[in-house]
Image 1 (spheres, chains in turn blue, green):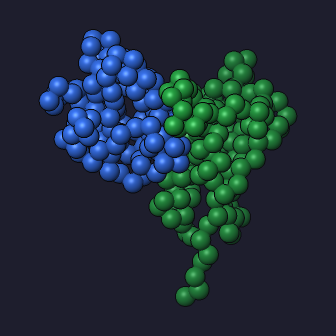
Image 2: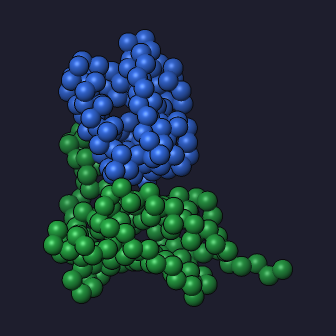
Image 3: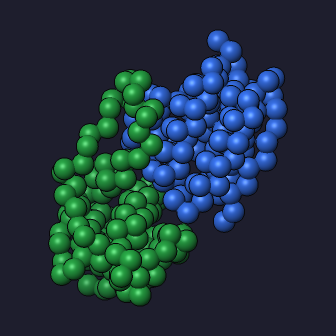
Length: 114
Length: 144
């Protein structure tokens, strides 16, 4: 399954919608895209994981690194996820304590605006 | 006991195939519950990814071997590589999620995930490689 990463803007936030399986084989494409966006100044990012049905530790690592890079540019990286299968992985690793996870893009943006 | 063996080249683009085959095997009657199948798919991905990365370049023609053992009360999957081996207990502990330095660590979650997601895991040297053996309990077969 391909990783599709179309970008849209919502209230100044760049929304990256990922889909499919994010594993060690596909995560580098996501890392490249997120790095490109941050380096171009889009440091306020929402990564929409709603259509992602699998993520491994490499995919999590890409998100952690991108969060670090976004914050280094005075930005942030928020997630959208309601899939219990994916949320379970964040909880198993404790990363749900690091990321702000919204139920929709609007929700994630609103949380960020608080 | 039934056994299903899969041999793959040490290439990361084969991981999706491994997930599919192992999850299909674990879905045979009595199947693992869906949530445990998810655990298995992720644990196998992590272990197989490590095996592929550890595979010695001079053994590139030799496969990574994944064997599924369907025992009455448990599902066991063994993953054998041709790597140098490692001590899982010697891995550095990641900072707590509330520690700001946690963001400096993009890797190191694979082995902890395997330990959390499986009922038992062992890492044993085997010849010129390592066997990671992961076990998940199967549900009891209910009498008709």
